[in-house]
Image 1: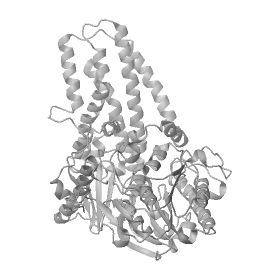
Image 2: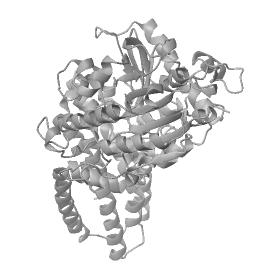
Image 3: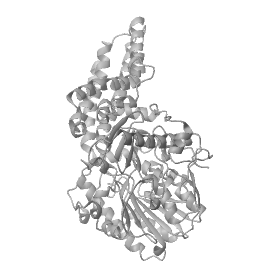
Image 4: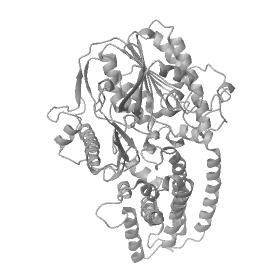
Length: 608
């Protein structure tokens, strides 16, 4: 009876895995039939671990020996049903989220704390069918659970209860090995497709939330890791650098555009989507880095990396989630050079802790959607859960006029975030859909127009001729891409202003190079800590990225993916596996950066 009870509670995990395999079949094409079989069979280890960890205590309490009360049993039985419903919800969320990042839930659960209302609003705006289907299934599940509850029996005998206790402990640990099962164990075969089939979102999300599965990050002697990462191992702050200037006194307008992949700009990707005329014009007048990549897959990561130069580290929170070590930041460096700091986001002030991030990074003036008046007549003004870009850009322009000069402004757009809202007819270039690429293209047409309006009006301002405009994305729109793996990370970096020679620049870089580059372009004097290098000086010569629990490095030879325990994939531009020597070199670069960053942050030796 008890084994049947446990088996029944594991069925939702198995069903979720089956749906994942069927619905995202293109993500598992490289697996053989034997691999798929092992994925389903081996996945039970992670399913049973999640089930036993989350439900083990109420199961044990419901089967307590010598407790004859059926009311006691029924109470804990209902508790198990309620928790299992939460598990079902997480499995559904994971299946939907997998479309966007091609992996399971990870640290997103931690990032969403405090924004659950916004998450529900987003889900209702874009996934009504899924929510209604889940609601119907929940009613069916609770009805069936209530039927089971009517047939409860008294607790187990002492001997049977001890065996149940030992079984639940073993299942929660994933077996009898010295260490409990962890996310990293799914990557033991060096195959991330198999790992995605083995894992489930409840396991990965809960482990990330508890930081229980973080690697130890210790691969080399500490001084060697710092040296290979580009730091001075003998210095108190090994990553500290100094920029002597000279000060240029330029203003900075920095746009962080939600989900703007490189290929969506017609002048760059040549896909002829027809929704970026203003960006196309800006590209022709600017320096554009044609081999530039996002260093993460989340907005929080993009904001952190751009503003501080700090890469996202597995096992450590992002800046908005409770970062405690000292670090350099664009706003604080600007303040030290006499700059006013302005941070405007299309989202609400508290969304993803924007207000705290702005203050922590040295931006004295911060505004969110609550502060921004509506300008256009939208079909549904409340349909954009993250705010409207046109109003955000115009509000930022007004505040720039009011600031003392020079200023550093940081503008975060959001309308191109799913669910994509309905727009005035002139922007509906494609069929309206809150979740499909056509919906994204419509919102991009709107955001492109809003950028055009901003630039046209900014050019009339007396401060414009002394202003640097830099535009990039927080991350790429990876869920609509097939084929070239790196397209899921490639984003534009567009630089326009005094001293910037227009043209296409093939220098390879990623977001960790932005802070050093901004300091260089603006001539900001002083010390700062960073792994990246100014792109004007050639950058690092490689891009450094994170994809959930996977770290990546891209150089001229190809790309290399690593789980921090195993090499996963190394592909050259022709689709062939990289030579072992190249893999070893890229592995040392990647692991050294990870170790040095982790060590120095924990020791609070990243920046003074």
